[in-house]
Amino acid sequence: FSHTAIQGNILSHCGMFLSTRKICLIYDQENFQGKRMEFTSSCQNIMECGVDNIRSLKVECGAWVGYEHSSYCGQQFILERGDYPRWESWSGSNAYHIERLMSFRPVCCANHKESKITVFERENFIGRQWEMCDDYPSLQAMGWPNNELGSMQVQSGAWVCYQYPGYRGYQYILECGEYKHYREWGSHAQTFQVQSLRRVQHVQRYRRNCKDLIA
Image (cartoon, rainbow, N blue to C red; front, side, top):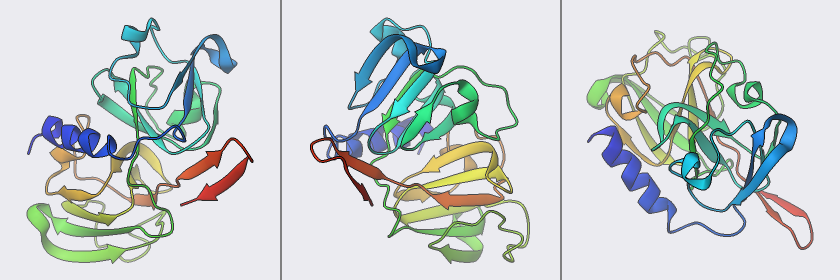
């Protein structure tokens, strides 16, 4: 399957789970200034909403993934509950200077307590395999034989895979499904290199009583 086909399947699956509890507030200026818009569902191109770029944002509920380009393409950035006053806030320790955020969508499968992923040494689910249910800041430190993952199967939850140890470098957000080659991780993926990964934390906030629930 192509990345576009997989992305379409994820977005279709998302439509079954969207609710007003998934709230993302975006601003066209840094530090939560300028034009403000509230979203409870995916946005394929922020320019169609009259905004040329997202320069700060707040995630009140749920988990989201932002993309460098429109149509959910380019580098990916996990957006969990919290405030993001400038681009560095969502790029984190990413070694690549990216100030653009042009599309985004909710992460539908996140379940921090019940997450499972199986990684394989080679593409097409061949070679040594390892089932994981926890966060790993360094796969090699835990015994993985090299700095690459050939393919992955996400049985439950949602995961962020990182190019380098310590949750650094390119991010690949993977939801339930099979990923037999790095080309299926995202349009920006150009290598099998993955050296750390973690579960996506999904926080829902009910505005009426301000109660937090972590899934």
